[in-house]
Image 1 (tube, rainbow, N blue to C red):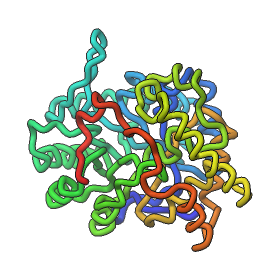
Image 2: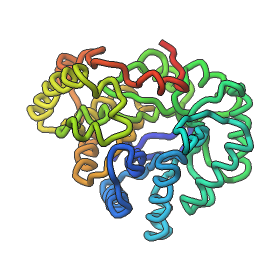
Image 3: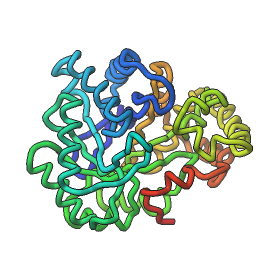
Length: 334
């Protein structure tokens, strides 16, 4: 696989990574054995980047990765470039989330992540959500201190706007910004892609296959009901969901005509947007991982890109990507 850089001068990683929220149960039941099998297959496919968070399953995703690394030894640890995040706290009694970017909180959560992962240092550490009480320059200084302490190799932010990236990068190089980006969600084209290219920052794209809509096996009503993420998503409810399934059926037919898995074609399209883009699809299925990886070796011609735009033009998706409650935190910029 052709490698892509995690930041200017950062480590080279496979063009797609593993989005390990899927290990947490947020998209349906998952087991440690399934997670380990998926990571084994990722090595076979040449995929060497794992993205997780302290809040995915309240540490469960990190613990699964840690148990995998412990069972496979130094070779597996040396293979994977591991990213994790902190900055969101969730009250177990109410389920309410708050954001905390204070030095003590981030340091404590980072230490907890390192312990669950079973490592002394992670390759990339994100602030998962911005805490508006603290200026981003001050937060960036805190993150830079983790690099000096040898606990983090590079620093990053999730769901920030281009102007926040510029402010943070003036303090310390920012290796990556994570944002939802796909044929279904294209707002990063309106400023974030360009700012990442100017600064040499990787744009790590989560939900690159539209939370399953851009696949050969899109969610049905039962799968939506079983997922805490999907059941509250406007795009997966009522008339919006029906319309989105109908629209993406055209994309599935196009992918079949091109001889590529639908998920692979969605990944291939995303990789054409910029050399700074690194998608991190999430899956619990080894076979689906192979479909995703097919997009890394699928070159797209100008004609094929035009055909994709014809069936999924900008703005085709029905419904917002988040319900109102989940829009607290991500920075809007267009």
